[in-house]
Image (tube, rainbow, N blue to C red):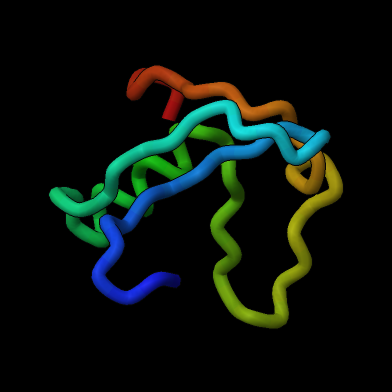
Length: 68
């Protein structure tokens, strides 16, 4: 985090190359959470929960709201 910088979500591919940059400054926490789910990220129910193997190295893809 850089103080004073615009908050951004930076998505990288498996090689560490930037594939997308999303401005988060106008989004609520709920909108940020929804955005992550749309990109296929897994949300753990607790700190102790293990992320399922099928979610650990997914190719990023944005789902339509219908898929959620």
